[in-house]
Amino acid sequence: MKKYLFFSLLSVSILILASGCGFSDKGNVEGTKVTIEKDKANELQLELGIGAGELNVEAGANEWVEGTIEVTHKKLKTDVSYKLKEDTGKGIIKQDDGFFDNMNFDNVKNKWDLKLNSEVPTELIVNSGAALSRLDLKGLNLSTLEVNAGVGDVTIDLGGKWEKSFDASLKMGVGKSTIILPKEVGVKIISSKGIGNTNFVGFISEGDGIYVNEAYKDADVIIHLNTELGIGEVNFQME
Image (cartoon, rainbow, N blue to C red; front, side, top):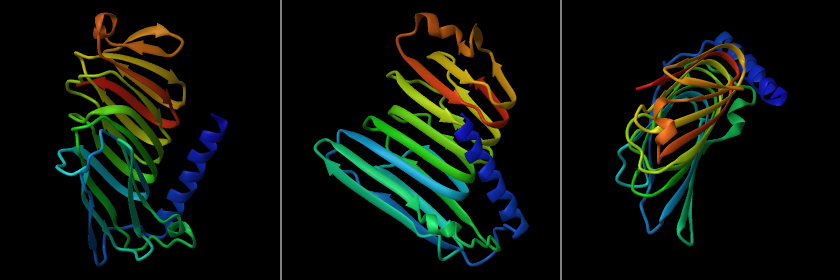
């Protein structure tokens, strides 16, 4: 936990430095189309890695991944890789870490708008640095979820109907986080205490940082959330 808080505080320093350099959306925007084509994979492992910027993710892709990335800085080069090993497809979309060397955030825009396919079970990992993240994951076929957030507001929508149980690991950094969860599907939250306010709206406390919804007791499908809370406000609420 100490190591994670150190990372969060380091991210705060990055954000402050960025603010001092005048972060803005001005400049010549270059749009890059992002596609990972659908193949014979029966399951997916997808990893998304964004440094500073805006990340929007939702269901609705015909291919494994579809979307665009808009940038205004030449160092914001996006690497897209995909390999099929037996029945598992592994895709990685990330940007060059060298962007943070001698950074100057003047006139920088880095906006990701991605859609993911919901046909096969998907292990999804999202890593963000200083970013505004909106993860609308309703309708996806998640087998596991891992979110590692640095600095910035984060919204994760896990509402809707889920056919299968899955585990989610959420490490929230600095900022306001909103986690939206289903009412009809069982939910169990194991939460570590961070620095700031944590609200569990509509959930039942079982003590020792454990919270469940009313559907949990008799549910066949359960979302298990393990959360490490950082600095700021975190709201767990039902749709």
